[in-house]
Amino acid sequence: MKVFLVSLGCSKNLVDSEIMLGILKQAGFSITQKPEAAQVAIVNTCAFINDAKQEAIEAIFELVKLKKQGGLKTIIVAGCLPQRYKHKLSFLLKEADGFLGPGNIHKIVKVIASSCKGKRPLLIDRSHYLYKDSTPRKLLTPSHYAYVKIADGCNNRCGYCVIPRIRGNYHSRTIESVVKEVKGLARTGVKEINLISQDTTFYGQDRYGKPKLDVLLKKLVQIKELKWIRILYAHPHHLKRSLLDIIAGESKICSYIDLPIQHINDKILKLMRRKVTSYEIRKLIDDIRSLMPEAALRTTLIVGYPQETEKDFKQLCDFVRAVGFERLGVFKYSRQENTPAAKLTGHLPDKIKEKRFKKVMLLQQKIIAKKNSSLIGRQMDVLIDRRQADNVALGRSQFDAPEVDGLVYVKGKNIKEGDFIKVKITDSLLYDLCGVKL
Image 1: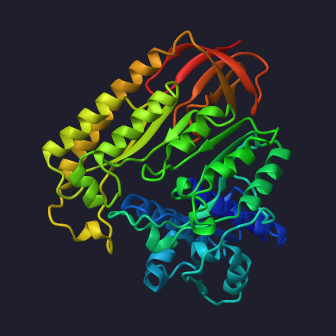
Image 2: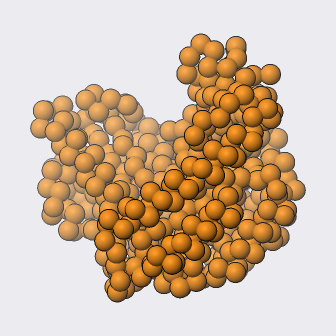
């Protein structure tokens, strides 16, 4: 039986998709990238914001069209959307044949078998699933890099976020399991590991009584085959100086700090329940700049939060201008039911959110254009992700995470996917760089 899978949302969801595919392959299913060739289709959904929910619904109904044509027999809806809406979603999506939440992805074979017998399984509960180093997994990334999920769930309870309601409390994998998995990936040719969880800097607190990301990193840098280790999703409340010292002191750990601050105004930070103040964020960024002046500092912001005034927004813009983030993403506040933010007064119209979104993005475009121009003439190591033409390849520096940041367009002969090469930067685009192989 052939299976087609659509993976939506974040890299954490992507790992869940890879696990489902690995389990299915081990059970004898064949995997296809052509939905018209499949008998079973799985949509692993995101439900973080309204746009993500809409994308999931659209993906499901594209498969429903195929099902009506007769080739596709079974549609399984997995991930955060069924976990969030449970029986309500089952009622609304009558065309779907089965549902399972993120805590039950390891039961995907059972769900498919049940649905093929004419039943309509709904495996959604509050259970957690932490995969192990021995769990079968089929990578959906290029063979030279992978995401490694070191924990699931979240304890932060930010005012706007539904993740704890969907994924539950924070649960860390063991250090031993993560190290074994990374060693196994490195043996297969993976050169870059991206460590992920909802709050990577909180890793180990639940299992060991205190954060253990520093211990994990010290073990991972000893794996000879690895070239880059990247840390994603560092909460400013949990990113301590001791961890920064390790990042700065280890050449294998990318000089890349992913620090979602969301805002800088103290009133908004408090309404967001972010557990940090404007002063603490500024102090942390000063420490990072002092310790790692060459590091790429990435952040995400939310504009149009309830009660955000023009003065609050101006403070945010002034801060962005002063810091000069190397990488920056912006979200327009999306009202989500059953969150503290949804109950606040002072919700803003979409028109104002859109205006503020565009203003921050235009501001960041000027910042990154200036920073990229300053890199012309520099040499840097680039990891090649794919070839685009005979003498042109697309790669990334250590300052760019896969899928979310910029690219380096490299001219040169005999460049292969997965190569680490030395590149001289010759030109800059809006978010990308151009260079030649040395």
